[in-house]
Image 1 (cartoon, rainbow, N blue to C red):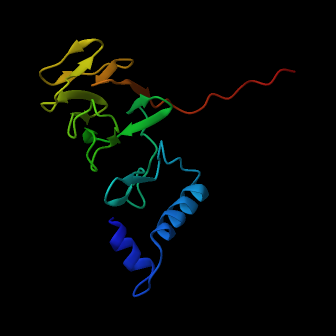
Image 2: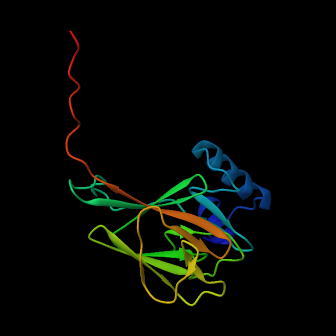
Length: 174
């Protein structure tokens, strides 16, 4: 959202110093324990305003994985990014599942398509290429758990977690 739109919604027909909006955003970030340098919820769009960057899902969506299904994720630095069924865009664009703030990463760098617990990755014509386990890819490539993915200078690890059955009950010692 642009700074002007935020200003108009927060303080309609009122003059407020430009620093007021920055202060409100800082207070929101503090309440959410969100770091401006590594945002989880609110990111700054330089020269424009602010954008929501958290994970969102439809109300009522069951986040648990059905028994026998797989949960696919990317590990990036200290972040864990869940991949949803279907297309997951990676890059510097606002609609990316993993917004990557790195000049070596293209806006629409790559996509991972998840289908029935398997995932394929495809480079989208990026300038610096997409690599899987050290190999540059030029067509959709099947991912295996533990594969290292490089998007420019950004390194991620692909993980697959299989849903197990019920928790085993520990036998008591007597």
